[in-house]
Structures are given as structure tokens and as C-alpha cells.
Amino acid sequence: MAPALLLKPSCLIFILLTVASSMQPYILVAASVPCYFIFGDSLVDSGNNNGLSTSAKVNYPPYGIDFPAGPTGRFTNGKTVADIITELLGLKDYIQPFATATASEIINGVNYASGSSGIRDEAGRNLGTHVGFNQQLNNHQITISSLTKTLKDSTAAHLNQCLYTVGMGSNDYINDYFLPGSATSTQYTPDQFAGVLIDQYSKQIRTLHDAGARKIALFGLGAISCTPNSIVLFGKNGTCAESITGAVQLFNVRLKSLVDQLNKELTDSKVIYINSIGTLRRNPTKLGFKVFKSSCCQLNNAGLCNPSSTACPNRNEFIFWDGFHPTEAMNKLTAARAFHAADPSDAYPFGISQLVL
Image 1: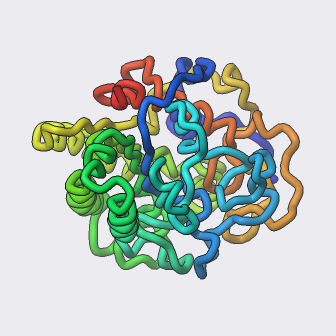
Image 2: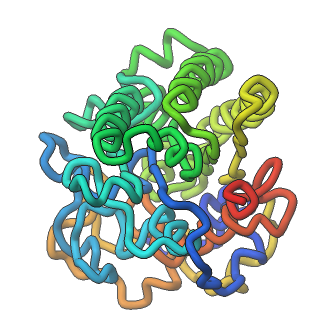
């Protein structure tokens, strides 16, 4: 494992995901929404990939070492950002994955997220089977059909009150555009590719709205150029891959503009943008982190933890759990930042706590 180095501010991927307000203690309150639907990739996958033919699945130790149920398919040592948002919403139980959710559980929401998935179906195919955003939306329709059998005419009113979070796009870059030998990067410039992604994303979010979503939080991309995997593959002398950083910025600028457009056109809805990069420029050690570019577990060639390998004992001091994904400690800060948005840079035009009012 490489020695820990302090990265310059532009390269602090998940440190940049937080601000001082993220350190606020969680406050347990009555549930602010009746249900929560989660769309995304491995950052919030809770087990949908377990039964798929893919290398992007982690239902083995040391994953889940700090999660009460052990290895569940979550790509971290404990809770994901979606799990922590569930707690902050006041919901009683974690949202179950679509692959295993029962008819009695889906009334509380469903987690459709799938590791290696993206906005475009092409993303992540190099790793095997996955459930892309288009298929996640199809799965949501299956859920709605099942709910209608129980809720009947009140189904739409129920769905209108739910929280919907969507975090997509990382794999469109990591496992498509910047994949060595990818035809996508020769077909589009970074600016053109960001436009292609946002155009499709816009249609997909409108599909979600048509299905009943009225409270939607869109997570922007983090500085994926600064994960341990990106630094090894694309960085220079142990630094972040600046070409990826620039591409991500192009996407995020367009995503924020899309939020304005959706709020203008979908007047019966509220859509927010979660700033997953942020502008924090303080010393990260003040947040309790000491290791910024190395993983907490021992990695295999795919950048995931070796099965049954020994994890670092000081997990709260690490930003990264494996070559791509944050530790639970980092997820807690990210979730609090997205939820409370005490700083204007956290979310636009406001955070999740206001979205669900």
C-alpha cells in the first residue's frame, strides 16, 4: 500500500464532498417521507449485483465489516450514503434492493442501484452484467404495478410524497469514456460527451417524473480522477488525473443547469442538485482523516478488496475503502452535507431536508 500523501485541494475527491457543516450530529426525527427510491451505481448499491454475472459485486468480506448484516453487496465497509440518508429521513428500516424486496417492503421504497451502471447502457459492460439506469427505470415501473395492487387509487398520491435520489454518470467515464481503447473517447470530445450524457439524463429524469416522482435529488459527480485507481492508471507522480477532473466539471456544470430547466418546466415538482465536489479548502486532518490516496483494504487487479483480506483497523481515518469507493466515515460526511446543506455550496437550490418538506 502506498504511503499516505496530502493531495492538493483540487484532488481531494471525497474531502471535497464535505464542508464543516457535515460534522453536525444526526438528529432522529419522525419520518419526513413515507418512502424512498434510490437509483444509482456502486456508491449506493445494496445487493442488486449479487446474483449477476459480473466482476462488480462485493458480497464477501471484508466488505460489510462494519455493517450489522455483514457483507450484503454494499461497496464499502459499512453504510452507504443512501443508508445514512434513510436514517436522516427518519425511516425505520434500510431500503431493500429491488432484487430481493418483498411486496410488503416496497411500500417503503426500493433501491434499484447497480454497480458499474451508468446513464448510457454502454457503461460498465466491460465488467459484465449490470442494471443500467434505463433498466432501473423499467424496474421502477414493475414496482409501481405491484404497489397499485395494494394502494389502488392512492398509489400516485403515495409516490408523490416519496424522496427520489439519483446518482449516475461515474461509470460513463470510468468504465466507458476513459476506458483504455474505448471507441467513445474517439467519437466525442469531453465537452460533446457531457452534452450527450445530459441529453439522455434529461429524458430519463422526465421518465421518472412521469412515473410519479415529485421530490428528486440529483447527485453531481465527485472528483473521480482522484480515486486510488485513477491515480495509479492516469495520474502523474501520484497526483490526480487532471484530464478526468476537467471532464467531470463539464458534466456537473450541465447537470446544475438541467436542474434549473427541470424546475422551470416540471412545475409540480422540486428537483435539486447535490454538489458532490464542493469547495472545501481546509486541512482535511481537521476532519479526522489521515490517509487520502490509499485504500483501507488490500486490492485485487480490478481495484476491489481481495476476498477475506485484512482491512485497516483505523477505518475512520481513511477516505477510501477500496480503489473506487469511500469508507463509511466518508459516506457519513457526504450524506450529512447533502441532507443539511448548511453551506450554500452544498446543494442547489437547497438540500434534501428542504426538498422533503
